[in-house]
Length: 495
Image 1 (tube, rainbow, N blue to C red):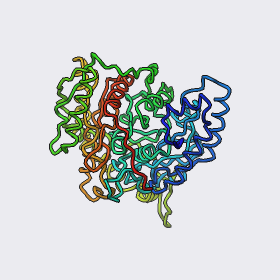
Image 2: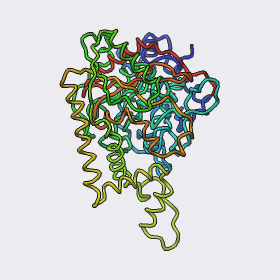
Image 3: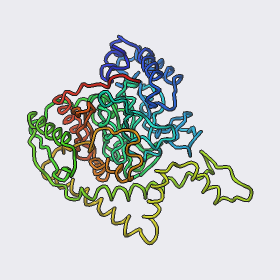
Image 4: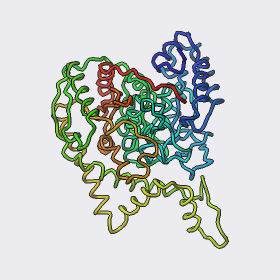
C-alpha cells in the first residue's frame, strides 16, 4: 500500500506508533504529485518547505507522545490562503508574483500543529466559479472519467485543485473555502468529503476575500473522520478576524459515535427541482432510508424561500466582491499594466484591472458595482439582504421545531466535461450551486458525503445541513451516512 493513500487517521496512528516517518509519508506524496501534472492540481510546489516541516514533525513525534493529531500529515493548501514567502495569487494574474510577508491564521495553526505543506492548489480565480475553468493556471482536472470515455471532467469549483488532489491521493487532506458551495460541490464531483463550517468557526484572516459575509474555510478529506480531525486543526477563535466566534472548539473526532437514534432528519420539499436526474432523486431516497435504518426519525419540512436563494446570492456575492476587489489597482502589489506616454492614474487602474482580471471576475465585479450603485441599491442589494434574512429564518424555524439535521442532494448532476458549459449562458453554470448557496446565506454548517456512483461510473454526493455551531453532531450524522453508503470507489488511474 502506498503511503500517500493512507487516511489522516491511519497515518496519525502509524506515525505515533513509529511504523512510518513523516519524511517517508511526505516523500510518497511528493512523488505522487510529480506524476500527476496532467491533473494540474498543484500550481505552486514547495518540496523544500515540506521536507523541512516533515523533519521537524519527526523530531516532535520522537520526543512527544502527545504530538497533535496533524503532526507529520502532508496537506495541500488552496491558493486563496496567504502563506508567508510562498506565491499566493488566488488563481488570478492580477496577483502574479505576490508573496505575502505573513501567514494566514489557519495555515499558521496547521503548521503549529506539525502539518506539512506540499504546495498550493489550483482554484477558480478569486474563488469565482463552479468548474475551476476561470483559473489563471488553466483548468484543474478531475481524476474520475466517464466509463471508457477520455473526456476531461471538471473537479468542480472553486476548490477544484483541492478536490482533485485529495481524490487522486496526492495529499492526505486539503484546505478549501466555501462561499456558495465551493467545498461541497467539488467534494461531491470527486467522491470525497467536504465540510463548510458555521460562519465564524474558522478564521478568515489571511484568506483572500471574495464575499466577506459568505466566505468560510473548511477541510476536504477522504473520510468523515479525517474531516473531523482536520477541522479541529483549522477551527478556533481569532482576535484578528472580527467575524470569528469566541466559542470553544469541541473534540469533533470524539463525537463520531455512530449513534443517531432519537434524532430527527428534515427532508425539504423545495429541493425537489424540476429536471433533477432520476439518479440523484434515487440516491436522496436511499440516503433517507439509511438514516431511518440507523434510528433517525424522518420528517418532511418546508424551506419556502429556497427558490429565491440563487438570485439573492448572485446579488450579494458580486456586491461584496466588487468592494473587496477594488484594492487590486496596480499601485501597491501584484500586476501593474505598462502605461503609454500621457497615461494618468485612471488609465493605470483601468489597464491593470482589464489585464489582470479574467472574464468571470470582471462579470461579477460589474454586476456588483451595478447593484450597489445609487439608483439600484434598494431595488437589488437591500432586497437581496431581506431575502437572505427570510432564508435564515426558514432554517431557524425548522431547527426550533425539533429538526437536528437536513438531508439534501449536494449537486444537481455528476461532474460535467471541461468546456461543456463554458459557452453556455453563465446562469446555467450558476445553477450548480442551487443546493448549496442557502447554507452560506444562512451561515450554517454543511457537509458533502460521497454516497454512490451514477450510470457513467461518476461519484454522486449527499449533503447534510446542521444547526449553527453543531459541526460535531453534523459530522456524526455524516459518519453514519458514510458507513451505510459504504462508498469505497476510487478513480482508475489514467494520469
